[in-house]
Amino acid sequence: HFGENDPEVAIVWRLIGDVHLELNESTKALEFYEAAKRIDDSFLDKEHPTMAENYNKIGLAWKKSGDLEKALGFFENAQTLIHSIFGTTHPQSAVCFNNIAGVYKDLEEFEKAVANYEKALDIDRKVYGKQHMDVAIGWNNLGATYKASGDLEKAMECFQQAIDSNTKIFGHHHSIIGIGYNNIGSTYGVMGEKKQSIESYQKAYSILSKALGKDHPTTQIVRDNLDATISG
Image (cartoon, rainbow, N blue to C red):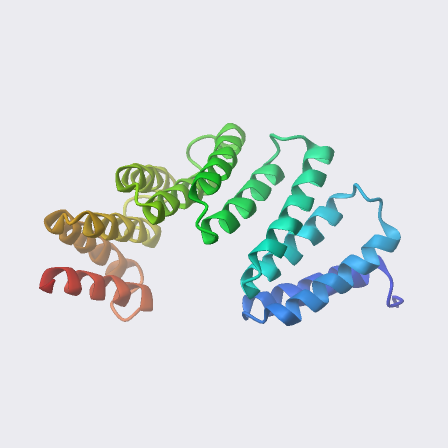
């Protein structure tokens, strides 16, 4: 039996907050994350890793609610703590750089977003090596940011790196490879390279229809992209 201010209760509040965040109920998520933080504030040392976790989760809830400035403040608090506890080359530090980069991308401050995504990717490559999901995700994050900023050549390089990493991890026929080719098809489309765009979407559709089925929402999105490009 736990009292309402027990650290075990804070764990439960965070889990409930996660569910609300997954359901896009950011206000509810925030209530539970802040309740967890209040409990932890009274029990834990200020430099405890859980305190950084609380900052990150509250930041994610503010980001989802659209308050990017508040999100950035909480992510920066988390980063300060993580750097103080673990140093600047720990995987948790990469999580912080990614969170901060995501806010800058949404704010369309692309140079800051790229700088933070690159720091995260650099840490993950040193920790995990080139063939790891977090590294592939890092390449995709960078690619999406370069694409949003209009640097399509760099976007293409990053998306291709992500495909190369994921192919070594999952093989050629996994849905994640299909999604990668969709990214490349989309980038070729923005470049005005219709032929390459169609070829990439066809590869994506072929992989996804086998991996997920033709009626899967992701497969249908790629089919729509392909049809629109052919008729465009």
